[in-house]
Structures are given as structure tokens and as C-alpha cells.
Length: 166
Image (tube, rainbow, N blue to C red; front, side, top):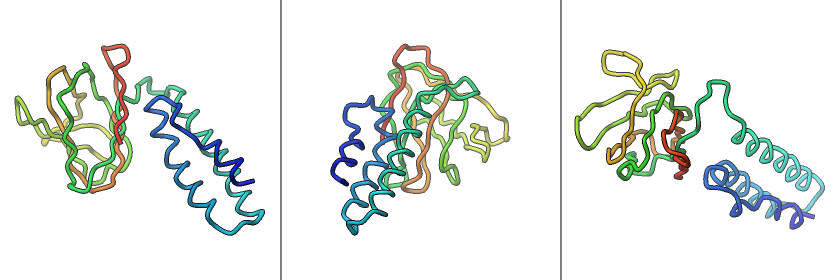
């Protein structure tokens, strides 16, 4: 039965931002399937499938704040995520995820450093909350604990200006 259930965790057919939602469930299901072959394992896989379906559907429903999920990032082992130059015009309003110790940096133009506060808003050193415009050609990055998962939420001036990088 596990093989029948495992095929339902496939995610390659999904758009990138939904793959990011689905992949952790796939990985856990594959690990569970190597465990003891009994009814509780199969029950766990079915419950995990239900959770995966809900997580993917949740990514499709707009949040009450009206913001789009623009980018999902996992901070690499180096502790520094440096994005390629922006190809979209974004305004970042909020950052969600593992926020402890995450900082925002621009690597070109002004060397403005923004902190991500505990509510997920970008703020200046003077603790002023502000949205952040990311125009085409601006190079930016995040620093933080390795493995931290961070999601950028905001608005995009470009159709299709939503990416997922993990």
C-alpha cells in the first residue's frame, strides 16, 4: 500500500512555488515508507498526504492581507543568501518564516541595511517600518541562521513576477 500512496506525493508537475510547499512532505513520506510495514505506517502516510494537500491548497488561497508570496528562500550553510539582480519590480511588505537573526542587505547602490522585526516587517535602524521596493537590476540578499526558511510577501508590478528558490 505504501507504494500506492507514495506516488501521490509527486511534485515535479507543480509550479515552482507549489513544489516548495510539497517537497518537504514528499521527503518525509519517502522516509516513513522505509519504516516498519504495518497499518500504522500506512495510516501515517495517509495523514501526511492529507496535510500535504492542505498545505498546497493553502498556498493557492490569497492571504487576508492581500499580499502575494513573491519568493521562498532557505538560507544556505554560509548564512548568506545573495540573490541575482532582480528581474522583477517588487515591493516587499512583509517577511514570514524563521525570522530570528535575519537581516536584509543591498549589495549595489546604497548600502542600506534593513532588519526583519519579530512581526515580519522590514525596518530601518531607527525601527521605522517600511516596504522595500526591489526594482530591476538591484542586487540584494539576506543573512541569517543556516537552514532558516524565509518567505517574501508583497506585490509585483510584473505578471508572473513570483519565484520560488530553495
